[in-house]
Length: 382
Image 1 (cartoon, helix red, strand yellow):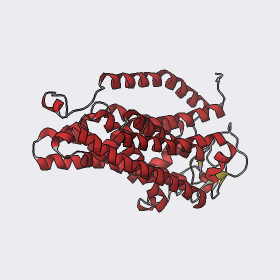
Image 2 (cartoon, one colour):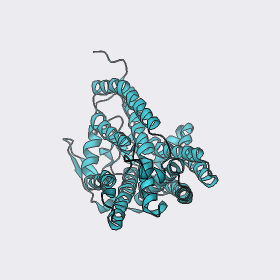
Image 3 (cartoon, helix red, strand yellow):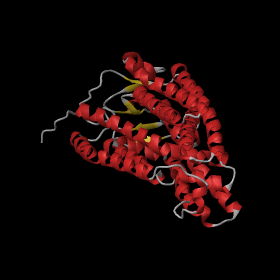
Image 4 (cartoon, helix red, strand yellow):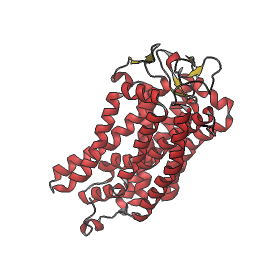
């Protein structure tokens, strides 16, 4: 069977689609995580807390689909990446899943009893369900940027030689805090749109202001870490983009500062970090001025820019190895077969627009502000 797209093109398309899925998750479920992390701080009584919960209640389950799609895409399109990352980061992934499980349980059980301590405990469980994934996702990205301690033997068996606490270094914690700031800002901007209670919106604007300032400062610190902290990898010689998927066929080397190589070679890529900074500043101005939609647009652009900056800086790397750079996984050596990528692309072209249309329809149907007054007469609210 003749495949209309060549192998290198399909590999790049799937690298881009993986980024789209990650960004889609951050833009949709990201504000859910941010709102949950803000819950104990923006709401002072039970009515306010229920109102805050119901700003995300109609859509949070659907938003998690992007996380599932992202994991599925990695499994199908980049099997080596899936095998190494999900085994090496097993405890971190387990912590994320445990935290995410707290969300549906918290939503369903929180209001089952009128006891204040019962509800407060579940409110803090929801906080953990928002804060912990945001932190761990950022720490994971930081580990990928600095290199993951794994190696492949001649039979392509992966050996992970790191430990759970080794995941937490000054740089990876910085990335984790940047992720928290980014999603808290996104959640605060969402609350200004969806929450009707003025006091809650005012607190969300205050916390969103601090999150925006922290996001700009942490993003700048991350750039300094990459530029002057000795992080980076590059290919050792020319790669064959059409070659077979064998992670050992494209040698790589650790090269301090190499994560900035692509920006020097392709100046248009500076658009991504510009969006990261500019979006956060726009969100800051929006939340301070009480302009809800500019604030949300700014937080969305900042999220898009920060995630895109990481992807563009690393290309063609997906998962570099810190202990054996020759085992690093790239776009050119770790993908599924030519036919597999093509079939997956056809399926994606058919079904991704359906997912997008359904998501847009769901938001349209369930749109509107959440209010304390509605809690007294709407039995469908948490």
